Amino acid sequence: MSLQSSHGGVANSLSREETQATGDNRRSPRLSAWLREVVTQALPAVIGLSVAFAAWQAWVELKDIKPYLVPSPSSVAERLYQDPWMFTVEGFKTLEGALLGFLLGAGVAILLASLMSQARFLERSIFPLAILVKVTPIVAIAPLLTIWFGFGLMPKVFIAALIVFFPIMVNALIGFRSVNPTSLALLESLSASRAEVFWRLRLPSALPYLFAAFRFSVPLSVIGAVVAEWFSGDRGLGSVIYIANNNLDMRTAFAGVFMLAILGVGLFLLTAVLERRVLFWHESNWAD
Image (cartoon, rainbow, N blue to C red; front, side, top):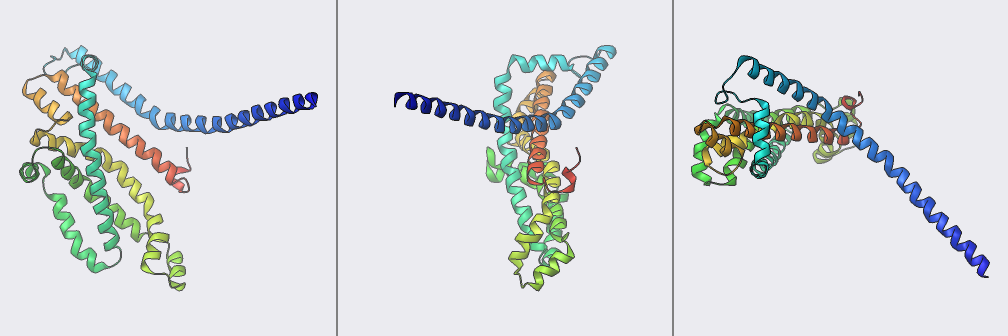
């Protein structure tokens, strides 16, 4: 009995080890695929930025540009290294307003586009108002938003939403209208309701257009948050840049711009990765 029990224990132990090894082997390809995707998305941006910064550094040194006019990238990096916590905290303040504004603007834009896709009358009624919002200078209404909503987060959210609203709405409307006629005729022959046609055909057809608009609009939301911070005096990278410019502290101002560039590029790459995950079936993601 003891010998059989011993053999059974050894077999169970080997079985557990084999199961764990199998699980590790399954996780390893997923991890390597994720790393390859991250490198594929991030490496071109890193190379492009490195070349631009090297050219900037050479131009400043060869032309002997004064630091109070244009600081070198190395001095800006040194300023970031001196106070990374401050720039990180202020960057998250700007990012908060930008993301909330993006969600608000995208939600309203997609809702209006879905309504306009159902009837031409709604499109002729809503589209002129959307164009009016588009052509209104943000700088002109930013002080009004500060007066209406006070100093704080809300002006940033609304200005970021206004900036991203129009491009997302236009792309969403085109996507909702760009459906396969054969598929539409099939659903109509099956007596599908407007809601069923929208969820089963119009929305999947619009996803490539929506993600194209998202990649363009997400960095714009950061710009909207910064513009609001200039006028509202709220915390964030916009306020840091505004104060630094008034004090002729170009190193701090450019350090804030660097942080904004990092936020914009990071949001763009995250949107691109999400697009590849969601639209793996679309031909735009088939080529490497």
